[in-house]
Image (cartoon, rainbow, N blue to C red; front, side, top):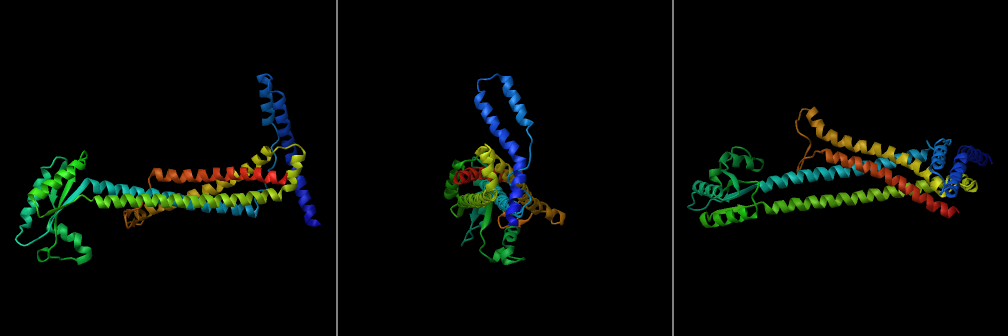
Length: 349
């Protein structure tokens, strides 16, 4: 009995705050329907009266444990979505840089063989590349530079003269170079330097592009799952809030409040929840990427945190994507609550 009396007293206090708003809202709709052909100054007076209407409390109680839990859930979902967006943006940036670097350079490889003058073959291959239209420059990679490339696997102090290690000619392509440059260089090498093999890194470029596409597809899948989980949480929270205030909703219907008025109250509440949770989660995701890119400099290491594919850093577009996800989560929370309230009100009716 005590709980029922407390619930009734809470309902009556909420009704005392909202009855005037609901009745005024209903009267405003009736006046709009009756005065559609009225003068413009009358509509202005009605709009002024609505703005001066008393603004009381909300139908949905604030500061509850359920409300705090929903804010935490929205913040976590936004944080995960922000990490996904930032990770996808960082991987795409690195893949784009790698693809651009690979596309600007090609290599000519000379393998040592019986009776082959490697140095002469290298110089001839370099001359053939330099004479090809679309080539900006070429150079022979020295023995020390070649040994430095093999140090992680074979150690220091390597004597290449005792090993059949291929030698390389680095060819830099001009910005306007196209597929015809690659084909012309390949044909010239085949006819003038038969011992040379040409590598245009096409296979690596395709692999990097495929990897970037897979990362983007995986990120979109994760975002879809996060959005679905957020929608489900908001749906259950909205239904629970409507069921908890069912007596208030019924009385508001009795005094003439429309479903749009009640739905707007719930939408306003859950929009605030979404904005707060989205701000917390988005700020957390931005902080993670900001610290990952700046903390190494503060610690004296000088470069951002390196991964297998390079330094992971986020540009302004990546931060803008995280901000956009935070706003999107807030809007999804508000729209979901409004749709859920309409459906729940039909069920109550």
